[in-house]
Every structure is written in C-alpha cells, then in structure tokens.
Image (tube, one colour):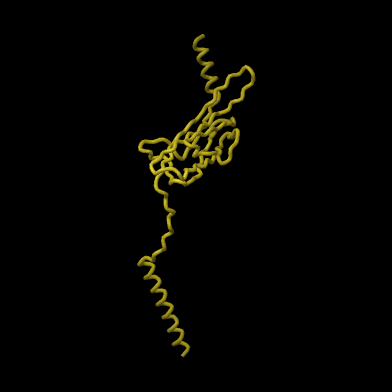
Length: 179
C-alpha cells in the first residue's frame, strides 16, 4: 500500500516538468563584481528575461520592482507577462541615478517575478517565484569613448609607396612608348 501511494505521488509530481526563470544582467556577488556602475545623474535601460524553456505549458508572471529612492522603473509596465512555452520575454527596466547622488552611494534594486497559476475549483497548484537583487554603485561619470583616428601601419605605408611607384613607372613607360 505504501509503495503504491509513493509511486502515485511520484508519477503525479513528475507529470509536469517546468523550467521557468529570470535572467538578470546584474546580480549580487562578492566585491560587487556584477553590480551596475553608473555616474550621478546617469540612466541606463537594463533588460531582464522571463524564460519558460521546458514543457508545453505557457506561464504568466506578475512582476514587482523595489529600489532605493525609486531609481528603477519598468519602461513598459504591464499587469502580467505571458511567456509561451519554449520562449523568453524581455522586460526592460530603466535605472535613473539622481543628480544629487554622491560618489560612493549604493542603491539597491530587487526584481521579483511571481508565477500566476490558474486552477479550477477544488484543485491545488504550486507556483514559483523568482527574485534577483543587485546594487547600483555610483562612481565618476563614465566618459564616452572617443573613436581613435586610424594610424597607418608600416606594412600599409610600404604597400602604398609601392603602388604609387608602380603607377609612376607605368605612366613613364606609356609616355616613352608613344614617342
């Protein structure tokens, strides 16, 4: 009897395999290696991905966002995000650092995705929730990289000189031939 009950429970639990989750471009790590770094007054759009990669069932997520001094906001707020089976859905979030921020300040951002399960009356559904947090570190404003002027290498100069000499030699040869 116990074995039959255990086998039944295992078959029920294994009947639906799901693999949904959240991909985050930033996360908590030692020494803030994977934190977002911005200058005061800067803003950046970061993109989270809601994934539903295994199984045949679509998943619906309700999202929430918490941040110190409201530095993070959804760029396209929706009540719920439908993620079809085998796909992922981008969720852009704008991080805006106040111009009053001080170098060395840290802002905390927490992104939560709660799977919304629908059930018929009398049924029980297990849902999952995913939470990821990261720090926004304030430092010096990042300079926009200037495009460096291309410098010709020695091989390119030698090839250019040879081509010019060949053109001059060809012009002299054509001029002598006409005479």
